Image (tube, rainbow, N blue to C red):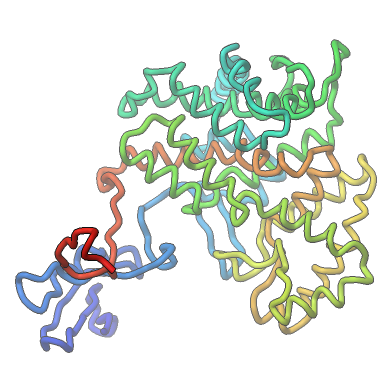
Length: 436
């Protein structure tokens, strides 16, 4: 194959050595070709045509998106063009949510209106609380969340009008507003505590902390450092391009499913330990290591592939995850309020080794967003089963932005990947007495 760069043509020449035929396909957006252009490559006219085989979509672009930009080699993450570092330092989660959903930062009046709408949709129907009460006392919070968000589709049947922009926006506001409420109710259920209703005079994150931790009728005022830390974590987790759960949201949404049903599927993907459960795995790893003295033996086990170094390396980032450095600074601020997490010394020593030893540097095993976030959540009083839920609350914004973009994209159709069949050729049925 050649790309004709020297000739000035923005095309790719392909020679099929089976037939000797040559084909020319257009190069789009820099280094992309349209997969359907390969279908013209055939041995004879009865052939289906050439396909690509790409397990886990490691080198397949399924969409054009204007939401999130990632350069994994340089460690860059931007929402709608804005560097994540600037947003984490100067913005709020709901302001970033508006940016991701609408494409531009809001004016003050636009932000005030959005915050007002989200604030006054935080309550859920009492039937939802009855649904949650039906779970066992030890039910995982994420399982309860998935059931809760799925059930909301039955309360808002107009959500099925997915091609009505006004209806879509109404559901977007409702989901963003109700996610913290469902999460707090799942937490309180797990502890056998009565539910705290939302307090509309509080901020998005302060209200969430209030519903989680307020005891009785006593006024609850969260520490502003912890409130801001949670807001920063929500910003960092709001979107991350075409990851597993965002892809699930798009695939389900491509069937014109309502957003609550699509959200349930996306949350199911996030529930997996290879995705949203990664920071829980980090905490369990640090706890198992126990002390700094045990680190050398553990790291030798990693080199022998007997141990897994959780929270290091990333499918996309081949440099330091930009979110990890922000979270590390946030962790220092949180620990000044909550006290130093005893696992922090283990985490810091693991990071020091990974950043300095050739074995880890050569494999791009830099800390990712999951490495320090679990330590912060634990210090703030969250049990490990809440970690994927804390991921899902802000990621709802990204899922909804991806869902809306997919619906408005004229190139998108119902998702239906091809396969390479590897089963038996045609064979005749054999009656059961003649088998064996």
